[in-house]
Image (cartoon, rainbow, N blue to C red; front, side, top):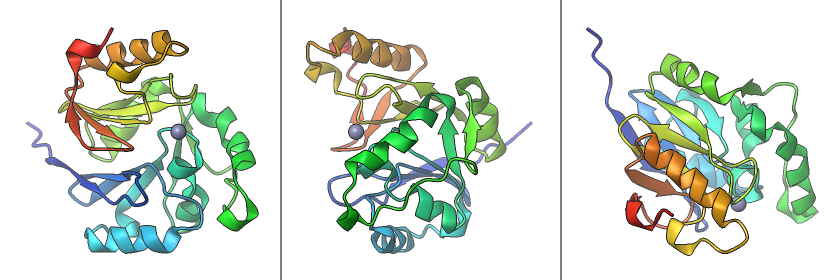
Length: 204
Ligand SMILES: [Zn+2]
């Protein structure tokens, strides 16, 4: 019988954005990857929360907006491989258009990322001791993904709160929330704001 290590979650976020470290013992995954030009801040927060950079097995951006993937390349240079879902590949070069020189954004190279499909996510996570999967949850952007752990914790990035869905993207956002609910999500770790229970009633 296997004896799974308990998964723990800590927030290393700053500037109104949550960056989550999911750990199974000393095997860790960083969910969302900082603002551009803030590697010093990220390093300091990881240190303060007791997370050695060299224990982070992958960085995962819930989507390629600069407050979520701004440090992806610098983290790679520091030894953290970038885990990219195939649905996200096209969004990576586009993100650069939203940066200004003073942001000190380091462009993400595309040849050295770990690109996987959604079905491959479970075995990839299993190899680093984290039981769960990565689910495609478009709505905020087409490249948005959520990390869903088997304990029901779900990291949803900027997926619009189900109660605040506007007219334009309502169907896509609602479908993403329905998918997460069907797959067992119970507790939401958003990129902005507080951890909250899944608000199942407000999901259309
Ligand atoms: Zn965003």
